[in-house]
Amino acid sequence: MGAFKRDVAGIGRILRSADAAAMVRGAAERIAAEAEASSGLPVEVEEYTTDRAAAAVVITHPAGLAEQAKHGTLTRAAAAIGLEVRAR
Image 1 (tube, rainbow, N blue to C red):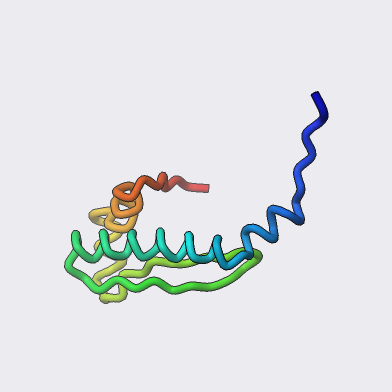
Image 2 (cartoon, rainbow, N blue to C red):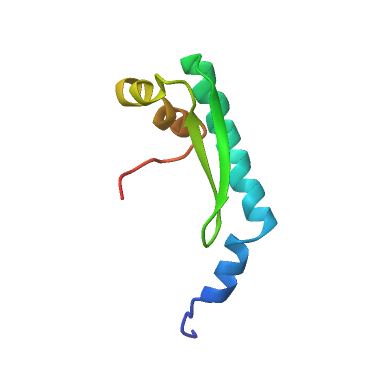
């Protein structure tokens, strides 16, 4: 059996691809829909790029921070679509 060698450049190309960006955006939109349905507050998806496609789901209402802190709205919404949220 040959040695495994990680193709870092290839992985980077995949993470910067339009397909990866679409998957990230789709997951973020599903989280936003779940969070909005459970909280009744407006939720938006903000896309950005670092070294890969990324998206942030934001409760845009002034009470959004408290909603997340008290009820874990975004964390629960992510879990509802099958994602695991954990501290770094």
